[in-house]
Length: 387
Image (tube, rainbow, N blue to C red):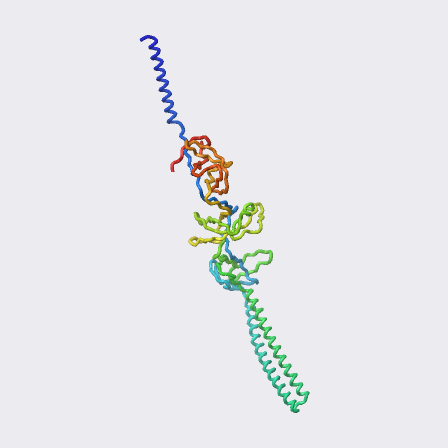
């Protein structure tokens, strides 16, 4: 073997070793290179997009009728006729204050009425007799048997008797008025239900002294009565959203106490003023009716509630999940070669779940949903997650 052949063989051996090293390095890179990020894709489609507003703080379930009742007069509780949780009917007596003195006055007034009626009957009978005597006297006077003086006496006596009868009738009316006054006094010592409802709370016990609340000095009511047959939600809405709310708008109601369920509602009232509470945002009170109140669950007055009011809706529009949107109204579009492209879009209505797309995407386009994953950016090659 010549020297040239030996050098040539050596050169080929070196080249083979280099090729093997390159092949091994390529295989090592192939099997150790980081895999493309796996991304969750969502197809751009059509559907309903709604613009909504929600309460800034928790709303409250309230009763359409609720009264914190106290007797018109103060006194000792002598009869407490209900307990907490009792259901009562309108005009039912709830409690009575001690009123023996007023009952005695009422009884006396009724007895005086009976006496007055008897006296009036007697006076009127006497008036009738006196008038009959006056008629006979006129007949006798016409025949000359009675003098003018005698006729005048009989006529005057009849008039006096009739006046006595009328005075007695006036006494009857006065006695009736005294009875009414006594009854009014008794009514002030009795507390009645103004409507059908349930007794939520009672302040006071049998034998205790109940006092009506003086003006400007709040005192606990004797009985808190709630009509729980009619309930609604009162929720504070930020003043910047109030202009979009109108009565009759559709509402979705959720309750902390009833998890996983949403109830349909409707705006029944928007307060015509803004609440100015210290250290809190200015809000407008909105009242929402249940369209179909929950019956399987025990809905209680005082539950916290959240409302989502739909003030505008667009049907059958191009839309994407709101979470697929980057700042600056950008999305990451998945191309056929697996590379992501940044696309700026024009949006319409939007809420926490869906955003309307008016320009920049087509129906059927695929965009990235999980934007917070490492390596997911424009120009990156990705791999879709299998469903």
